[in-house]
Amino acid sequence: MKFLGSKKGDLDNSVWLSNSDLMAGLMIIFLFISIGFIREKAPEVVGSQDYVLNYLTFTDSKENEIDEKLEQEFSNEEKKEWQLEIIPNENLIRFNAPDVMFSQSNFKLNDRFKFIINSFFPRYVKVLSKFGTLISEIRIEGHTSSEWKDTTYDKAYIKNMVLSQERTISVLNESLNSLTKFNLSKKEIKWAFDKVSASGLSSRSIIKNSDGSENSVKSRRVEFRYVLNETEKIKFIKSKLKNNGKN
Image 1: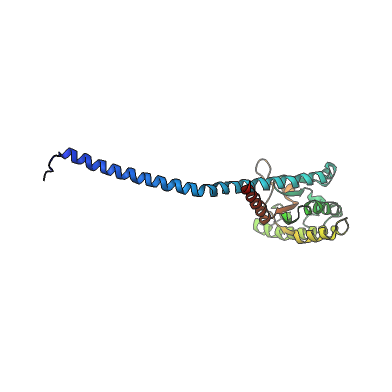
Image 2: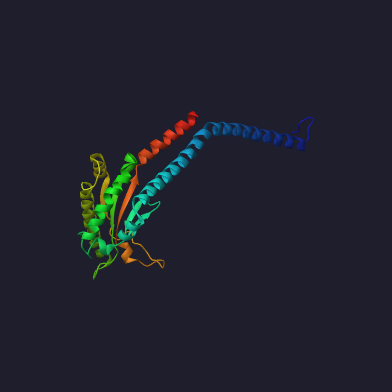
């Protein structure tokens, strides 16, 4: 069948142009839909980026502030004498003298370490309590090496878990008793009791030498770690974003 006034090639071209026009029209429609979606969601996306940025900035600034306060509180002489190490960005203070702290395989504190705890912990609380509800927890963590004489690794792990738990409880008990001997208010003492906890971790976080082997001496340690309150951080950041939106 033939079409009057047209050739086959003209018919093919007209059909092709019609399809092209249809596709172009659809692309324009999708483009407008996309632009509308982006315009609608852009503030939300930018707000999310600001939220994350504020979250990270807030966390870093507060951790730095706390670490600086702790650095100022304890003199270099004390740090050296007590073998105390303040570790930035990890929110912890580490005691690195296992022989000073406990006798081997024993959970009772040596007299020297009792003296150190009584000198250290009340001042540690004094610094942290100034940050109030921003601190959600103070964790006393006990760590051991993976060693235990004449036993297999799995049995050694369990024995070291029991030992590390007993040791952290001993440290917790001495730490809390030290608060009443220091010039702290009842409010500060209550704050400390509400925040502090003890956790024995056995050999799950050993410290390694540069060659990858276990450093059994450094692995046997006690650490005090503060934890920032996530809810308080989020409240603070939301208020910042809300205030920024009013400007």
